Length: 360
Image (cartoon, rainbow, N blue to C red; front, side):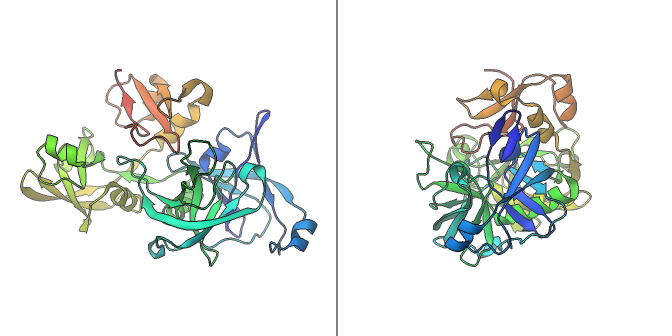
C-alpha cells in the first residue's frame, strides 16, 4: 500500500531486478509521502500449504524515478536479494496468446486471473503515441502496476487501466507493453526520469478526413503538425504540413512506431527523416537535443481535487511564470496546460499531455 496523508492507496507491482528494484504505475505512488511494499516469502509456490503458512513482509521502499507520461514508477527496497521476473521480447507476442494478470484487486493480495491477448498494439487515442496490450484477463482496481505475464512467466506488460461502464472488469484491460517497460525502466534507474531527446516537432496521425480536408496525397501515416521556432527541425528545413515517410530509413506508418523509435535514441545523435512535401520527396538529418522532463514537473504540482476536469479526463493547470519557466518551447506564457491525461480517457477527447488551451 501507499500512505498518502491519512489516506491509503493500494496498487500492485513486480520485482524487475533482483537487487530490489520494483516497477509499478506512476498513479499508484502519485503524491505519496511514504511507500511500503508487501512481499511474499521466498519459495511461495501458490499452494494451499504455502498460502496458509506464509507471512507477508511489509517493507519501506523509496521512489527512484517516475514517468507520469508513460505511467510507470520505479521503487527500490534496500538490503534484500529478491526473485525477479524476466521481461518478454515484445516482438514475440501474438494475438490470442494466453496471459495471466497478477496483483491485488480490491486489496486482495497475490491474486491471479487469466485470459488472452486481445490486441498486441491497441491505440486507444489516434493522436497518442502510446499503444497498449489489450487483454480480457479480469483486471480490477488494485491491479494497477501488476504484471501481465505469459505462460512461461515472462512479463509482457504492466497492467494500467480498464475501460468500463460499471467501474469493474468488463474484459477490456490494458497493459503497457514490455518493449516500452524495458526502455523506461532502464531510464528511470539511470536518470530518475524519462530521458527523451527531441527535435522540436509535433506529430499527428493522418486520418482520411484530414487527408481530404488538406488535399494530402495519402490518407494514412504521420504529419508534422507543428515545428518549434529555432528548434533542430526548423533549422534543418522541416515545415508544418510535411508528411513523414521514414525515420532512419524505416517506414513511419504510424505515430506509436515513430515515438518508440525516438525514445530509443540519444541526444547528440542525428535522426534521418524522409519527408513528402506536396509531391516532392525530401530527406533531412536532424540533430537530437535533450528534452527536459518538464511535464513531470508540472503534473507534480497539480492538485487532483483542484485541477481535475472530469468531463475531459485531464488535469488542467493555469500557466503562470513558474510553470512557463519549466516548459521548453512555450511560445506565449498564458493559457491552461494539460498536465496529465487520465488513463482510459475517451478517445474522442482530442487533448494530450502538454497541450495548451488558449481559448474556449
